[in-house]
Structures are given as structure tokens and as C-alpha cells.
Amino acid sequence: MKTSFQRSPVNVSLPTFGISAFTNQQAVDFCIPFGSSAFDKVCFVESGCGELQHEGGALEIAKGDLVRVPAELQHRFVDRPGTPMTLSVLCVEASALTSPASVHRTWRELQAIMPFRRRLHVPNAYFHGEYRRLFRSIVFELGTNRTGREAAVFALATQLIILVRRTAEGQVDDRAVSHLTAAFLSSVAELEERFAEPLQISDLAENAGMSYRSYTHNFRSYKGMTVRQYITHLRIEFAKRRIVETGDILGSALESGFGDLGHFYRVFKRHVGCTPQEFIRDQTNGTGS
Image (cartoon, rainbow, N blue to C red; front, side, top):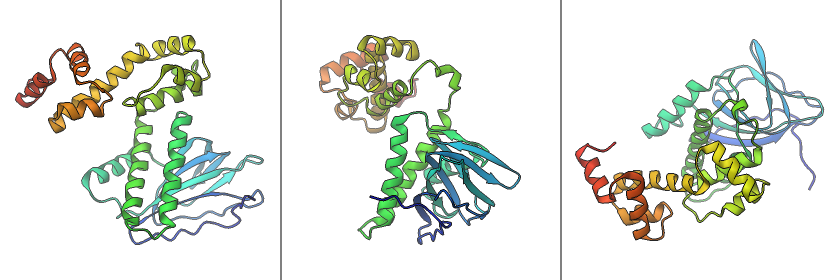
């Protein structure tokens, strides 16, 4: 299939619910003029590199970067010669995320911590794939006329905003992990998203391009515990939150990845220092941590 490149500015017409998205790549011989929009844009550089030029300066951006362009800001994206950018863009009108309160609060927090001069970087290939998936899903829903289209777009856009917010929160000094490969960090991110599933360390090591021994050694240096200990830690912390929220011990155990209730009880008491019932009682009485 022949790739179609953008030869004119993308004129976005937002639907009535105020959220849209698109992905594009400019033609090599096209230079987009300065312009502004009446809505905020969250932009993800899927590939290539260049600049976000704006009033008073320019911000260098490259594959894996995230930037927010506030409403009414005069700006343009300029490719570096030979490395055209593919950009995915979420467009959000001011009134689109006013409710529920939790979504509005997350969006306002993101606007505050992500001024247009700040660039975030997606930390690894796993999350790079998550961003691509969410953008593609939003674009797909926008192009359909299926039942629940507006709700689906709102839900996916909310997921995307939360992911950006968490990316901002999780930014680390690159020097602290410079000795670790991107594939290794990607495998850790995958583990943290899928800890409730029956993961195999050998599969994580293979995905990281490492031997089993090298992977487990690097993991222990990075997290301060073994892979199994870290998985158990994530599962127990998840189970604690679910037990408090639902009061359902069996359901919380299953949701956390424990297939055997007896095993869950033993692991829970070893890590928390009390049984699940005692934990619920302490939380209810306000004596828990």
C-alpha cells in the first residue's frame, strides 16, 4: 500500500462532544504554516524528529516524545530533513472533560505539569505500543457510527490522558537507568501491567533479549528484589486495595492473580502480618496503615 503524506494543514472539526484525534505524516516538500486551534492538543511523535516551533522559540522533539499545545497558541511542526515525523494528535475542547470530577481533575493536573515548553518521553517500547493502540482506537471509533461511539471516544481519550499523566509522574533521570537496555525496561513495564497474569520469567528474559541469568541479575539490581518477589509484591498491594474497596476476599485474590485461596492466605499473612479478615477489620476501625 502506498503511503499518503500530508500536503496541507489538517483542519480538525471537532464533533459535538469536543474530542477528536488523527495521525499524519507530512510530505517532505511541505512546510506547515503557523496556526492555532481553539482546543488543546496532546501530540505523540510516533517516528522521526523535528521541532515544535511556537511564539518565542522552538522545542526539539523526536520519536517517543509527548508535547501539549495549549489552545490559541501559534505554532507549527517542522520536520528535520530526511527524518519526517509521524504525529498522533488528541484534540480536546475545554468543555469536553468537565465531568466526572475525577477526569476533570486529571486533565487539569496534566495541563499544569505539562506546559507547552515541557517535553515528556515515553519510556519504552511497551508504552510506545500502548500509545499507538489508544490513538488508533480513538481514530477508529471516530470513523464509525456504532452505538456508544461518543462514550467509547470519551473512555479511550480518558485512558490516554491518564497514561500521559502517569508518564509525567514516572519520568526518571536517564542517567539512573543508562546501563539498562530499552528492551529490558520494556519487559519490566509489561510485568507491571500484567502481574496478575501467569507470566514466565523465561519469556520476559527472551523479550528483553537476555539470558535467564542475566535478566534476573539485572532485575534484582534494578528493583532490589527478585522477579517473583516483585510480582508477589504487586499482587499483594493490588489485593489490599481491592479488599478495602469490595470486602470480597476471594474475588480480590482471584483478581490479583492468586488461583488458590489457601496460598493467598499464607502469602498475604507473610507479607502484611495479618490475615485478610484482620486487615479488613483494622482498616474499618482505622488502625491499619
